[in-house]
Image (spheres, rainbow, N blue to C red):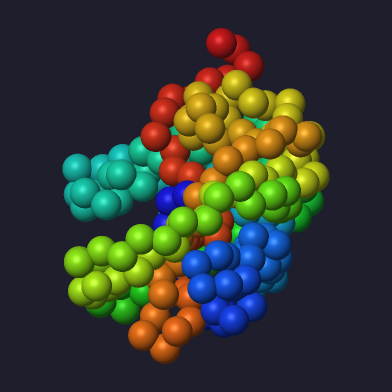
Length: 238
């Protein structure tokens, strides 16, 4: 899963070891489930899969592109011109034309949109606040740990002679909402082929842990997926 924030969680090795070289797969399953659940609680999100809209604060009115836009402003407007109409069509946003302004619209959250919204912000070095919004769904349910392997690297992610533990799991997505199920083609067209996770389907995932010098394991995997709009806008008219 792509990372947007790094969540590092310490896990005591004693609870994950059965013997000198054998890891307790049941304990890894519990640990993984607890981490997925915890990120939802900490971030107050509806699930582990999030569709990123762009930098936007609701209510929002379209701002036309300008020659005075910075590169970042141009990139952000290019995202919003795709994401906002899509989620208005899906039903998570309202969309009303701006009076006497051709092709400009007002957007705001619907009740459904408020339910699935994840808002977060960043501060630039100059002190400017960037407001970000996404719609999140799909809590992960860990079904099974299928493999645990350990390998030591001369040069690892965070230092020399680093021991990494790779945990391969199967998971399912719980409570995929109707607005995702009923708009799969549109979401896949904008966010990618693997952006839709359906109920009762088993998916693979790989988690990475680092064994610290203190003898504990530290999770180095992202526990939610923030999907960026890199494709095209597909509407009901197409």
